[in-house]
Image (cartoon, rainbow, N blue to C red; front, side):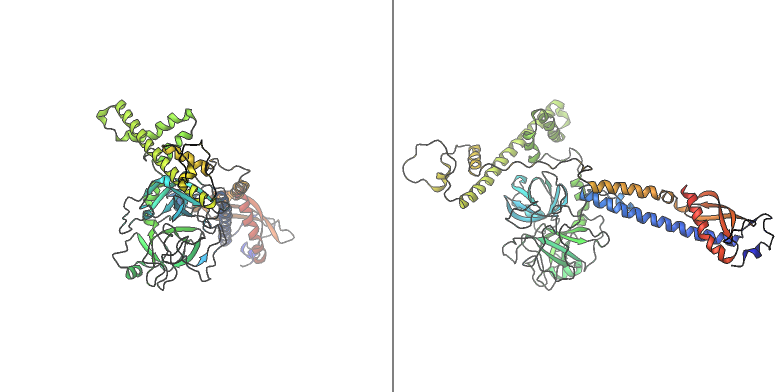
Amino acid sequence: LLPLLQLVGGAPLGQGLYPMPASVLQALSSRGTLVLEAALRSALLALERALAEQQRQRGACGLCAPCLFPPCANLTRHCPRSCGHRGGPQANATAPRGRIMGGSVAPRGAWPWLVSVRLHGELMCGGVLVGHSWVLTAAHCFAGNRNEMAWTVMVGDHELGKPEAGERAVPVRRILLHPKFNPKTFHADLALLELGVPLASSPTVSPVCLPSSPAEPSPGTACYIAGWGSLYEEGPAADMVMEARVPLLSQETCRGALGRDMLTNTMFCAGFLSGGIDSCQGDSGGPLACQDPSSHRFILYGITSWGDGCGERGKPGVYTRVAAFADWLSLQMDPAPGSREPSCFDLLALAQLPPEQQPPERARLCAFYAGSCRAPQGRAACARLSEETCRARTRRCELHSYAQTLVDLLRQAGDFIRNHPTAEGPRRPPTRQGAGWPPPFAGLFGAVGPRLQDWVEALRDMVGGSPPAPTPDGGHLPGEIACPGLNESVVRVGAVRELYAWVLRVPEPDLAMTFQEILVDLGSKNAKGLYRAQVRATVGGRPTAFAGLVGLESDSLARSMPGLVALALEALKT
């Protein structure tokens, strides 16, 4: 820059105010706008960090994470609360991975969304926790039995047959098979299990994320499978959770390996065509999850469905494409009130309520059956028919419940007998029986009455009583004591918003600093070579005026520019 004293014509000091030239105003405006944009970037980064910490703390407390960016505001899928975070040690992505069938044992809690789906207490399939009350699994697992009272879901499980801290058996409220499931072709091989009680998040129990869009990882992406399936084809199940890292395959590759007629658009393949690493029997219903590179969360893209053998060369595993059924999943997990027939779990739970609460709750549940009434029947006749249908449904549920209880207690009694060969069974009044040894099983129980309930009571006495019914987890939101980190993060977000409010509230079109006029008092030069000046500018769309110091030579002008920009920012803050 030329010395500004030349620009003002060498006028004598103290004789008036002189305007700075347009070139200087333009240079200041350009620099000030850059500083204002940098201030906004800094504010947004600080706010993003604070919101991310709040989201993490909300997840730790089992609450739904807030929507940080616009795309998620348009999603209608079920809120998964905090999802997709692994609880155990992270897998080494560079190390060679073993296979589920005889390969790597997963660290405890490494896959907190993996559950075991059990029929009469025996492992049948894997499953995936996709919400605090929902498990997604394969529909073909229920080919032989769809009675929800026969099934349980074991969460927090790692080693089969070994009770562990955090492990819990959860009753199944409802089994929902996809209506288009074809047991011959395995099309739409999906089933949702609604749990009898909601689950609280913990290091070993938390849901995986569901896909938020139809887009999927590209072929070659490495994803993870896990389960307790067979260690080799037709072999025994694994004792502990096994895991493997497998690449996704293109549809062309998969159809070439398995046949074009075998694979529909709702299926995909993963694994190595060289064989050796694969899911196997017992892994059905388990997850294929991929880690999102930006959020580092695991997203469920596949449910283990079928395969031609286990780990055979040229025969990759086949998985149901979860994203293809997003609408069905959302509809089932967020049904309209009264749109679903009450389950046996719901009807039998009425007996556990206080007497005064039972009639209104029964009326609410039985209202579903009023929808089948025809208009000419009249309101009174319709109400009677609805009540009769509901009572008949309740009686069937009670019968199924007794039968299931009998099966469970027989199994427990069998275990008890094997572990206690000298057991004498429950003591009962002596009966008039002939001499000689009775059959072993009859001798254990003596004379049991003819009713089903008599056998239930006898078996319950034998095994020391049935386990208490599960109670729902506390439904209240964690407070300050339970979630101190959440409360601190909320305060932090508020503090960041307040600290940067001066720039966050600036509309995007106004994000600029424009210096309109600087009037310099030529008679006010100080020891540093700076002059007093009156400044008029528009900052962030707001007109402002303030006093400052400015230099008139190249050196002093350059030194004074940051001070003028800082004063303009301060004016915006106030």
